Image 1 (cartoon, rainbow, N blue to C red):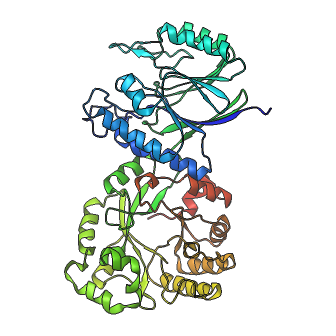
Image 2: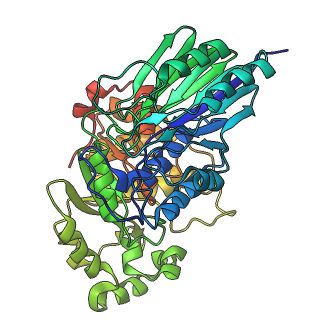
Image 3: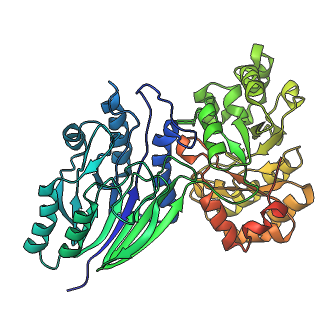
Amino acid sequence: MSEPSLTLLAISDLHYSGLSRQTAQPPPLRGELARTLLSKVFLRLSHMGVKPDLTVLLGDLIENGADRNAELDLLTIYGELSRSQIPALVIPGNHDTDAAAFNALFGTRPGLHEIGGYGLLVFNDAYSDTHDCTRPEEAIELTRRVAEEHPGLPLIALQHAPIYPPIDSHYPYRPTNTAEIIESFEQAGVILSLSGHFHKGQKARLHEGVLYHTVPALVEQPFRFSLIRLYGTRVEIEELSLAMQVPAIVDVHCHTEYAYCGTTADTSACIALSQALGVSTLCITEHAFQLYFDKTPAMSFKWQADPSRVEQVWAAPGRHRMAAYRRFAEKIRSPYVKIGLEVDLFDNGRLLLAPEDADAEWDLLVGAVHFIQDYVHGKTSQEEAEALFLRDVQRLVDHPIAVLAHPFRFFKRNRLNVPTHLYQTVADLLADSGVAAEINFHTNTPDPEFIGICAAKGVKLALASDSHALEEVGEFWPHVNVLRQAGITPKMFPDMLFTC
């Protein structure tokens, strides 16, 4: 019989403050961002190609368990867990609501849970008003009894309070009866003990045959969590962080509430998240075509071959929503936030930008090929599509754009083969015009080969979250990863990445 294996995602200390009244959190805590940080963890793992067998939340999911809206805040976290479609074990912490109500919501009872050939022991330790923590004697005895009743079952202990090593602090982080707990783990042959509560976290340490790991708080920069892989009794722990600790990360492409295709786009939250995650400059670049037209005609792209319709909108007061967007943009522009537009072509090569908008002081224009005039899905051949694409890229770079958005995504969107033989040609067009190539993972997978060709020709590389939802904001792990695949390391970023 083969040894069991299990991949755990371990997260602790969200201190989420949503509907509950805000309390004065210490500056490092970003409880207002916790829900989005949790969703970003799942997005990060998706980018990494990892789907854990189990998520473990190790307590303090919310900041104020005594608030009348505490259960609703917990329900919000429950919803994010459900959206991930990954089974979860959730342990209450000292900030959470009543343990019985907590366990009823999340469906995690104290005691043994057999999952994937492992026995996971869930402990609900008791906290006093003075924050002292104690493990009930019956819970300690449970550890020994489970080991006797399930010989050979690898055991993993899950609790909020750290067990080992000692913590030098006046605050009582560890249980008052830690010595008894450690002894019970040793006697039961526990292979791994996971805890939270101590926000700095503690690197995994082996003590008397038990590996102890305290998972850092997700709510504090750099927003860390742990990926744990078990192979039999062997344990591998990888600590990950959401913040990108690399230089010169400029997000050239982030959407707003004005985007019809946006889902949870929220400009103020985008700014806060980007700053917290280490993005050095954020560029708000909204779709011009969605600002000029109502949703249905905008998304039909019929305006692309109908200049009279465009001219009619441009002549209307406010140019539909464009004037309003410009007023909005000026309110948020700052040394940190730059303002731009994502622009398309119409009428055989004209840039969809009214004269008074073309004269505005945009920080950048990002050119995009979303739809190609003269292309008919299912009728235009691959060869014809390639010629039309090259035509429009040439037309775009002849306009004053700074960045070409999501190069070659058009082919994937239309179920065509990506023409890798055109990489050199497009890179030459970008190099000759001084336009940057965008690296964009929003419903897209950039090819490191194209990136490498652009870099070799001196084309600047523009990083873009292309955020339409909050979980996409500031997520540049896949960008850094594909740059490495193209031979570009973070030390090279200041010279090779586009800035504005």
